[in-house]
Amino acid sequence: GGQEFTYEGIHGPQYWTKDYGTCTGKHQSPINIEEHEVEDVSFPSIKFVGLQNPQVVTLTNNGHTVAITFDDPEAIKIYGGPLDTYPYIFKQMHFHWGSDDKEGSEDRINNIAYAMELHAVFYKKSYGSMEAAMHYADGLAVLAYFVEVDNTEFNPVYEPLLAAFPMIEEVNTNVTLNGPINPEKLLLPGEIIVSDYYTYHGSLTTPPCSEVVIWIDFKDPFRMSHEQIEAFRSIKTFDNQKLTHNFRPVQKLEDRKIFRNVI
Ligand code: 1SD
Ligand code: ZN
Figure 1: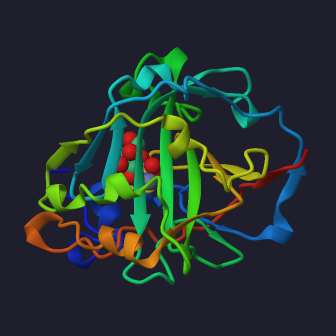
Figure 2: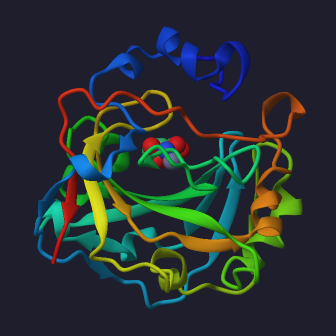
Figure 3: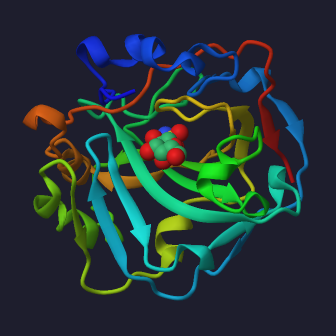
């Protein structure tokens, strides 16, 4: 504790284990998803609740990522799929990216990385709070969306968010966007087929690496232009350095199974 974790140097991923013992656990994330080793299962469909009401969006540079929060997060819930009938409440979304477009995602598919990965973090409602939920193996659900480079056009949904990035270049700053945004635009990008996903049990990909996450990785990526992805690399971290990349290297699968939903 005390010292902030980083993605480079003597507080980088190889050294997280010194301050956070859980980072050496056997159910760590991210992982490589080897497609020919996954087990097919039919889960009930994943349901989204409360995505239609526009919400005021705040962007925060916390030195580790850019986080997106809504003014009424508890209005947004998911259930179904591997979460069974238990509702999970929305907390925040954030991004992982790389120094160039060839890497940046945390999970990999057949050892291939995408340019970025967007995480939407939810906690199990029955545990009462995010903090309490972080003590249970099924406490959190994280939806993972891969981002690939679009060489022909920019992503219009993300334009208003990226336009505000110059306001949060410095660490520990935030900006509230002018117009409210329909959460559906961010949580259900048009390119994603909600029934096509991988799911496995793992951890937070950042310290304390708690093994409390039901990961749901959508198979289909959505797209942003190279210029849009480049905007993330101008975000500054601690010591006024640019946060050029913020993905943890893949961890061993160990005794776990990865499931693929089939309809
Ligand atoms: O990196 C995030 C971290 O910012 C925080 O949101 C945590 C949950 O409290 O989750 C990790 S991650 O595993 O979603 N990358
Ligand atoms: Zn994350």
